[in-house]
Image 1 (cartoon, rainbow, N blue to C red):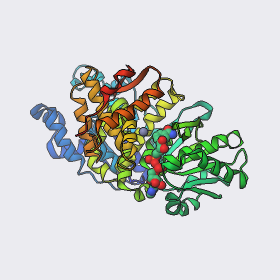
Image 2: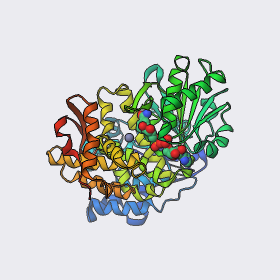
Image 3: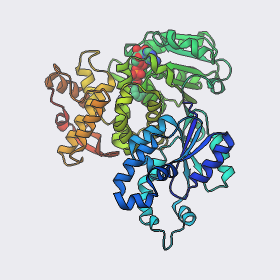
Length: 508
Ligand SMILES: NC(=O)c1ccc[n+]([C@@H]2O[C@H](COP(=O)([O-])OP(=O)(O)OC[C@H]3O[C@@H](n4cnc5c(N)ncnc54)[C@H](O)[C@@H]3O)[C@@H](O)[C@H]2O)c1
Ligand SMILES: [Zn+2]
């Protein structure tokens, strides 16, 4: 999102004040220093600390933070300001955040670590706690360079947020923008656009202002994710003439992305492919990672191919027309990612749940970006899902069974995943694998996000048990179940199939 304020975070000695002043001068904006603002109000920080303790200091600091102007301002944050998730989200919503990255030993040299610098005590521990928080900032800049060079790097990094999927010669950018402005640079020349009959009428006019080319539309919904529709899309692509270098643009949710992606993987043995996801689920999950395909009578996603997109473009504006229930359901995949991989993301979900449930765009941008970053990292490490990528199936063993057991439309995929995640975490806790209090925390966050944490009434356990049996047939004798064991940490548990029923949540 475009914001007209920049906040600098980083450890003491990173140069937040020096760089902040120089940056403000360059932009003609005001400079604000949070520590100085605090001191003006409450007196010197070390005195306040000594008198009232760290907890009181953090509380007062958060109040000072929220009094900072958020227009045409460069703000130097305190070293620990963004450790508080609510404060961090507030900063992310109002500022472009930049992490000034300086290695700990260099920071020590800069501030001086000798006698009379008691502030350096426990620096290593503090740094270890804060680093994952700092790196959740929008951009990270090497701050060991000269001040003006650091300012140049910050200015060069402005514009929409970009996360990169590092897959060697198939690496690509995920652009998290607010509109389609700039998409032309990613899709120059003619494209082939694939969409569904709900998204097309809503967003094709806006897309066409930036991307030219004929459109192939199919009926919205999971029921369209078939070999029949794939064939219709391929026929359409062939009919209008699609060369080896003509990109296919998928405009829509996960169904459009999976189908158009599979068509792009197969036409001419593969043509370039650009994902333009328009649902929360597609943004945080299906558009990144290159899994494409369709359903088969014998199973979901049974026919498909790995075909990485050449770019992913998210226009957050498109979420405005999405049904709020669908919008929230996609957040379940973010909750899953936070639960098993990313404690910093989980904290933000917890602190920002009401804003996220209400669709606040800036808060959504932040959690989408963090979820994309996590998914990008997982895909780069394990593209074909032989190891780490399996962790993203957390919540899905029970979730899929619930989806199958529930009458169509009663549970959206994300809702089933939220219930499944809580159920699987409870099972892991019952086995002594997961911290006892963690499942309840997940259930609380799910509820605050407007997601169910328990199966809907009327879904009887017999039906769920039967649905689970379908998975039993699909697997061999052992299922490798990813479960959360604590915030942002997971284990992959080999589970003999006869024990699968233990996972089932009890309907209320
Ligand atoms: N490839 C992967 O890695 C991966 C990962 C997760 C899920 N998936 C697949 O994704 C699919 C689910 O994706 P989904 O939840 O996005 O479903 P979807 O594509 O069916 O979209 C949900 C509904 O919202 C409508 N819609 C989409 N964007 C809209 C917008 N901006 N405004 C108004 N309406 C809009 C659609 O027309 C549809 O009716 C499943 O088929 C699942 O298997 C794939
Ligand atoms: Zn899912």
